[in-house]
Amino acid sequence: MFDIFVFYALPFAFTLLVACALTSLVSGLMLFLFRLRKTNEVLRHPYLKQHPWERYPLSIRTAILLDYFLRLCFPNSTFWIFGQANRLLPHVTPTEVPSRIKWPLIGLWSGCFVGIFAMLLLWGLILLTMNP
Image 1 (spheres, rainbow, N blue to C red):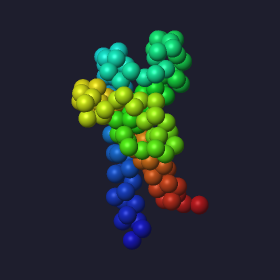
Image 2: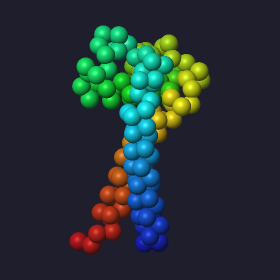
Image 3: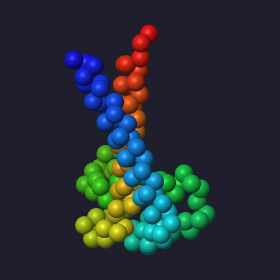
């Protein structure tokens, strides 16, 4: 019974991992090459009032993009980093943000998070099928 489950789950987990990687890659390229300036103009993160985008290190830039994603996807949450993003960006109304601004952010971060889950599932299935 377990062999039948693994027979179907292993290729599914790998396919999901590849799909998430491609989604993150396409969304990230679209965001960084074409939509980054417009995204920052529309969503206006408070950190960008102190310094321009180019002066921040990569870690702060990704944190800003993560705040945008969390505000757009979880606008009513008050817990942990979800709540912090909502406290930093109360001026952003997710329903009023255009779709051409939303989809690269949601594709990038959703692909990353679902991809992490798919990778853990794939590793777990591989470890379960290995013979000692």
